Image (cartoon, rainbow, N blue to C red; front, side):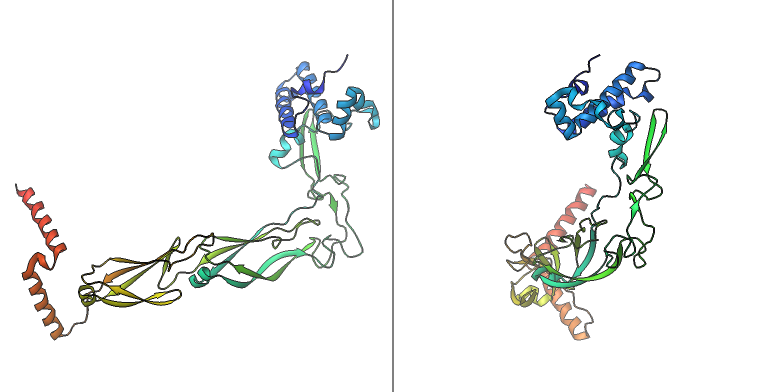
Length: 377
């Protein structure tokens, strides 16, 4: 009986991409798998048919031959042993193909090169350094390639051998009937190779822990949570794989005077009752020096003065923020008898003047009076 077109079997077009091809195969494999269709010969036939089609179309060379010559181009009899594609149980790869991506399995062994892990380093900076930028040397613990064995893990003059349990695949398969489960090889732990004579310096790991000193250039304007990426400065990869990256996480220490909010700097300044009432001039600190701030007469506590452009210029660009100075009128303490006497005379004169000198207090008292009048009415 002639075979159906493989593209028709999987229900895909002839220009289907690899991802859609695998998706179509998974759908059919799940639908017709014998475990879901006990004693159903038709489902078993469809399952085998779908697997055969996928084995051909998922292989670039076989697919090219099939597209040019049809079934004759991929005749199973040409395969070694005449046992079909890959020879062996037609259901042997179902869990590797369908479920391998989900559980991290797959047909390929674990002997491939692996990228090293990324590392994180927390760098504490003063507000001044974060705003102006700086260069810092950091000492980082990391895994580096063992110099004694050149990262192979085997003692110098020896080499790793192919694992006898999995044949270098890194995976072993357990099967009961149609049910097949693939798992990491217990002998080589998925590496595909075993080391009979390990390197004495790294104990067969191929990597050693070491501290290295790196220079980090911190750009001006960084803030809490910003990261600086140092490519290739993470852990060295396994089996010749590329190194990971190092991410330097910025943490800005609290400042005794300023508090940063985005690109603005905030500070609070105490002023005396006399300065608040009569006005005056204060010396204001900034990250670049000192400035004079004029306090107008009759300034109330909590008043915020904005000094434009005296904040922070963000690392992402744009104009610099502002410096916001909030003044707090300070109540005098530890008064002597003469000071108390003068303050009492001053307070009496203010009260006698009423609303003229204390508009906020008078307004508040009017609201309180209205409140009580409404309660008693």
